[in-house]
Image (cartoon, rainbow, N blue to C red; front, side, top):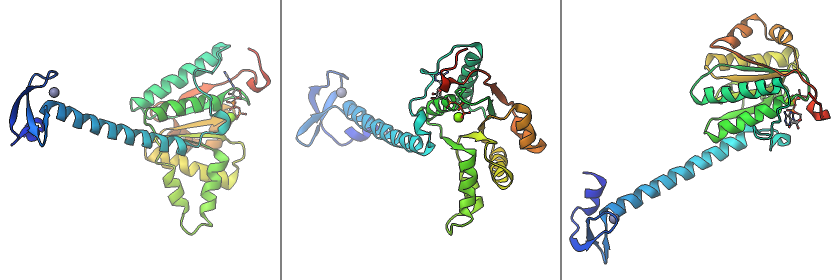
Length: 247
Ligand SMILES: Nc1ncnc2c1ncn2[C@@H]1O[C@H](COP(=O)(O)OP(=O)(O)OP(=O)(O)O)[C@@H](O)[C@H]1O
Ligand SMILES: [Mg+2]
Ligand SMILES: [Zn+2]
């Protein structure tokens, strides 16, 4: 029995015709109602409820993404392109985001000196993905290590549970890698990278280190894993934009 027959089942048809659907209306209590209009209304209500749930989930993901306040307005639209390198970086990031939306799961590496717009572009990408319902999460390497180490002293969290939580995101943006994470801290961050690799979850790693330094810092095993499935590398080598740097 479909929705329309279920609505009109047992109800008496009346003379009146629905001008929209050109079908006989039925007697529903004191009213004359079109069974097709009733089904449409019901479907609209369902769609609206679904849209509200989707909106709530997206809002929750936006809040949970923890994008830095400084980059609240950093987007693709206000990323200025003044040189070929910036154009190349923008192209790579946009196409990486598109790939992710198509289910690709490769990693991304963005390196370059300070003030070259790495965090800006990563936040622009995160916003794009969040709008499309993907669960992106931003964190600095130092904060990530600290979060895991905090778990050592908390009764309700373990190192494992925090690492596991960071494997859940569709994309992890790990910023400022290599800045503060030496020894134990670096080990904690590497554990998250291994765990995400095992769960086939993409990571975007951002660093001031050079590619060679980064490769050395990650070590052969992690470097090899990080490249699996095709690694996108974006090098930002231009003047510091914080200082209003030119071309
Ligand atoms: N191409 C650009 N167009 C517009 N604004 C930019 C551009 N590049 C950088 N900016 C702005 O310059 C400032 C510094 O950029 P951002 O914080 O992204 O640099 P970064 O590469 O992450 O630096 P660091 O390595 O020190 O973290 C930000 O306010 C950012 O919005
Ligand atoms: Mg930055
Ligand atoms: Zn109707």
